[in-house]
Image 1 (cartoon, rainbow, N blue to C red):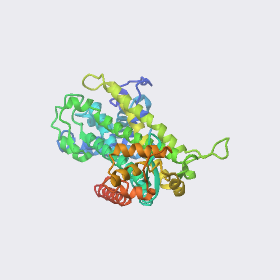
Image 2: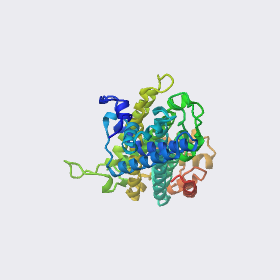
Image 3: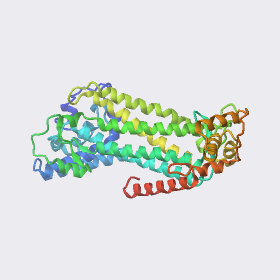
Image 4: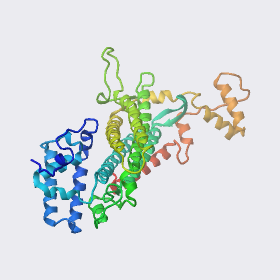
Length: 446
């Protein structure tokens, strides 16, 4: 049983916490971060002579036992103690007695929870960045196999010009590369240690904050105690990165839904990423693509929720900040699951080369090539060539216009500039992207 000085008696007495204030179901997910922060804090207190080595050793041993209990499912969570911090501290009292009370020296729940949240965001931002890299790799592998596969390129969802399917897929590689960079920025913005800021004004003890930062893997410490306990910009950075990634995933999935329809028939999704209809035997529904597309709104909602929570807060810590973690964690879960699903879906889809090629034929989709031919070979102003070709495609008289046969393959080959869809340019772009992924791997990004 806890002593009379334990949190369960000194903070709440015999009263149960109101369900309205309890955050345990959410913040217990940060147990690793919470215990790691407490261990580093105890080590620092002993190093600075603020607590004895023996007391610090007892505290650390107790915290390690608590971590093992949580991971083995043996920990007795108590909702009446509200949150992860008080649950861990109460159990520490049960294990080592009043020595447990020394752990909270020079620390507030305000700087403690800020530290936990930053450690959590560092972890999930790195994981999301890795997931983006895996999706890029899946897209590149499919792109490399389809450099010479021709597909209609669309504007306004109307056939515009023939392009390499590899070129289409590398467009998404570019998007998810930017997303990986955004998660790197979220990781960087969360990489600041707030512990040592106390409730809002710092501490009266000779703390070694740099020591704690090094122990926890932070690259720097916070510069202002008031900002440190109330700053949640790093959470906004992470959820924004997640929201942008979901935008790109939704665009990819929209293309997948269109390409897999009977009207297009460009791809076929594997059974693992599609389903049949409960009523219509012929149906194959692109469930995963549709769910990813739908979940984008969920992450947007998380971003708006945190922005709204922060917008009217006075300095410094306010209980409103308890509401930052549910959207933060939901965004992390959603983007991780969506990236994994998209990676599998892309890796297993079958490509109907014949349907793509057939849809890329005909004079209409080559209209721009014909206009360019008239400019190049007959020295016509482009606008005049444009009018002549437009009339020709409508079957109207065009005078002395003489158009050669141009194939979709020839059309691609002529777009031989950096960033263009000529196969040699697409191949070079794929090799460059593979190289960037390799560099990211060497840098430990995935």
